[in-house]
Length: 332
Image 1 (cartoon, rainbow, N blue to C red):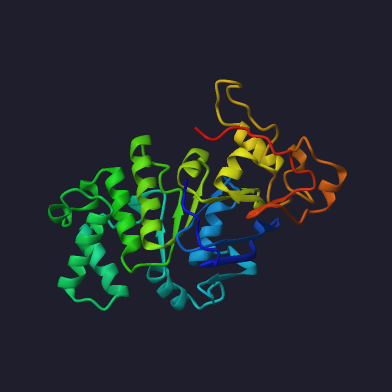
Image 2: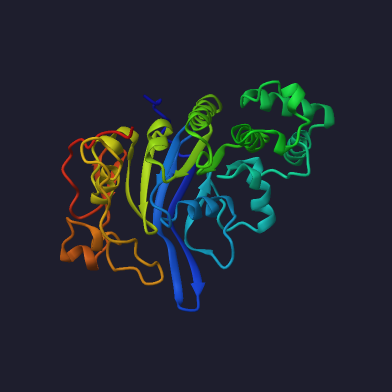
């Protein structure tokens, strides 16, 4: 059981809307989502490809690719609004107060520079340390993230590390300036199952011991079950449900959450897919975007978007017809 976290949010996202202007019109990739993350808490954001998970993380860290833009909403970090800052200011915050871990570690590491050079340069960019002090801190970080023989390996190059060890180096880079928030965007997708478990354990330990807030985006419900305190499920750019991890897996209230969990392979029903396809975001259906595929949908669902309905403490759902609370089983 994961620890009970503080209620005061370190990160607050309110009514976030992300748009991409196109020749055919405006594509709304993220549509009015809101959530908080407290210090020491790991919030999982899950959903199918194209749900808007990675774009949400990119918006928080100031890395939206043009012509994408934040069209509405606010992002607040430790009481400071950061979504409307000039590029240079958000660049200073990125790395110093927000660390990032991406899916492919090779995109975060320069193959031409040794690990020591990359760590030391990152540390000295954000902290007033000389070369000796920065190298000592780099060694401490490599030890902390579990690089064996860190003293001998610190001067190696990225290609001399395995995929799992490279991802540990990336985590060390993300921690260089002691950030308060980490954006982890599908950080275990490219790793085998054993290495995945090690990286998940490392992230959970870092969140607990450093009191760091973590936004963990993934399409893998199994990793979500292993690491997250709370889970937000997204579909076609809209937030469907947010719940503590046990409530998400055992008492899902949104029909999409239920169907998503039932699509996990099991001995009882094999693989059960969700009929239909994700809508094109350039011309999405009105109301709840899931209604064309939803077996519980009514006419109201096609014309009106539901507001948040409180199911229990810290568990809310956007649905006119939430499902009855019965267990569908946890991810295995």
